[in-house]
Image 1 (cartoon, one colour):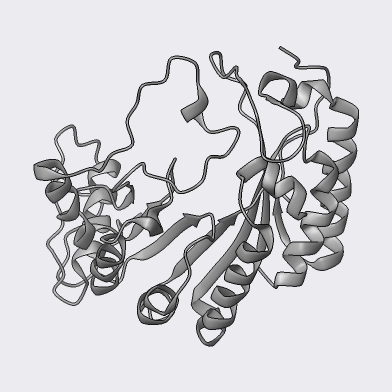
Image 2: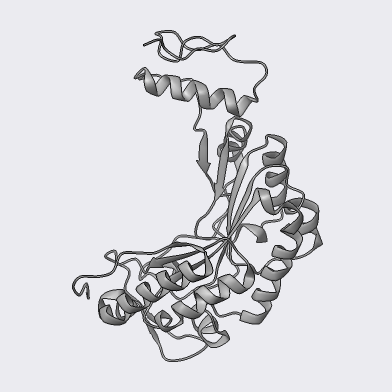
Length: 293
């Protein structure tokens, strides 16, 4: 069997690295080089990661009840990635095909974030952004995101289907966030074929009953996908704090092991509703036995 080969590029299975192809973008060449290095078991590589997840800052404008900021003994400051390290990260953008902004922060509150998005656009990077939907205005959705030249994926993290539960989980105005999301979706309509929109929901005892309503909400908003995740149960995630709605939030009591039967029922109902609405859905597995800690 002959090894795949293209004009101007060495064999992908040979012992020598392939030549760069002038008709491809820098990030495309970088990916092909990375594939060659992997296929040939190279221990020393010249390429950079074709897919990156980076963060400019860990600053956030919400105080979600399950955020690790509440962890007992937490002294991690809210700060920015600056200096030489950040400049070196920026140099990776033109060589990346996919760039993801997803972490413990709200990237859109950073004034410099949209300059980074412009750099990604110049390199025709596929861009993935996770946001709480709180930042919305012409500068953001018209000038930058709606005009983004590459493929764009945006996830709106909500965790609730009603104002009261949203206030408890995230401490903010649910109706305002929904207006913002609808504004984004409306502005993305002309580029719908290059945009993937989703909603996400972290399942807790306080919001498990709203899972079906959340699937209906995703359908009403005309997003492509809805995603559900279990609350993390790692050691050290154990705090009790007041909320803006309802009783104290006790982290361990909110974990799925404390409501197994209802958890399983709502997971199956969400699966059925997503099929009816023809929505792509991501779900955790049903629980077999209690995981209470």
